[in-house]
Image 1 (tube, one colour):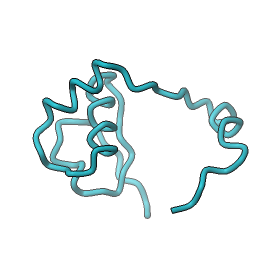
Image 2 (tube, rainbow, N blue to C red):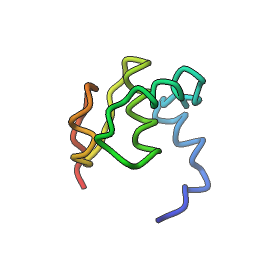
Image 3 (tube, helix red, strand yellow):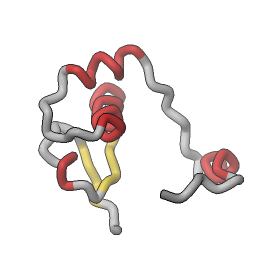
Image 4 (cartoon, rainbow, N blue to C red):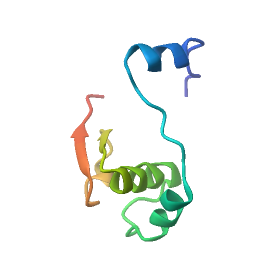
Length: 75
């Protein structure tokens, strides 16, 4: 796995991405998800997207069964 680029925060600002903190609401939402996916990080992304009304960009087919908006990423 590659490390984040040194200018990561500058790149986020340049492309107008807003970091999303993990909240207690997100953590609790993970516990309510069906067990379609075993990766805890991906489950958190799904929980955050569902809680905040966001879209997950992924090429991971295990995310697709969740009731969450997705965009298929190119690999």
